Amino acid sequence: MAYQTPRLLIIPGLHDSGRAHWQSWLQAQYRDARRVQQRDYATPDLPRWAERIQRTLEQAGPGEWIAVAHSFGCLALARHLLEQPDSPIRQALLVAPAEPNKFGIADLLPQRRLAIPSTLIASQNDPWMSAANAQRWAGRWGSSFSNLGPVGHINAESGFGPFPLAKRWVEAAKARAAREQRARHAGFSEWSFAV
Image (cartoon, rainbow, N blue to C red):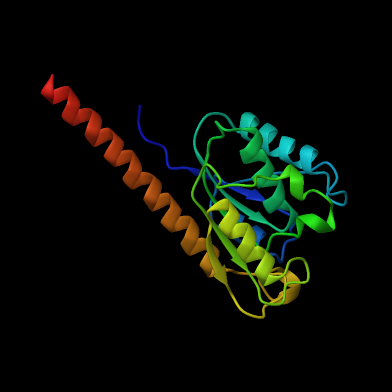
């Protein structure tokens, strides 16, 4: 079976990501990208939001994914990864996570390293989570951490329409996945020749 490049999964936060938001811009860069559609974007219900991620993946059919989440969507993704150890999501970008304590859900989130490689991007003055707390969650989840400085909530309101950094991360994640696939395939080929 031919190798398929992982598809992009967009996981918005509260109130969705509108047309001017960088997540919508990023989704438009990849024709096979999917967006997790919540039934109620105004109500932050962690178990329900995590379940919608799972339903979206099931409806999309087999294949691997790279997830890019924003705000409360980051928390939903972390919960999904905790509940679904066999998730087809292989890498995750968590941008400007919301503070779990604002919603009383910190104990529903993973308290140790996520099962997949992840990167957490935060801001020095994000009203939804302090940079120090973002760094703590990144450390807990084993995520590489980047602080973009005083840029707000990293959304359309703070000037993030196009977000080339996110696109570069997706391209690097796709390249990493392709290298890993080639390495697995080469290992199998070498073994078959040895038999």
